[in-house]
Length: 133
Image (cartoon, rainbow, N blue to C red):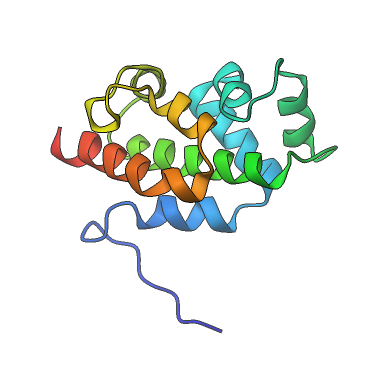
């Protein structure tokens, strides 16, 4: 078993990364839904309506692997930003034009890429917005 790393102010974002990995999918979806709203969760996961999101949060069904990875990445970015900003600001950041992403909205960037390919750019953009301004 690997040793636990202490979460502190010197390591911003560590708790967000840890939760995005450790949380069971239903709890992650519920928390993400609380942070950014059900419609934005559905958009990132590339589903046409919000019903699947409710089913995922209830543990009735699960999205495909790629969509689950996108949800986990979105949660990590949103959870990181929650250290300083309100849900409204996080939603605006996800939907707004972002210069760090060639002026594409982070939610769209996540939706249109595999999470493994988008993670570095999304987390750099979220970190920059959160800790640099």
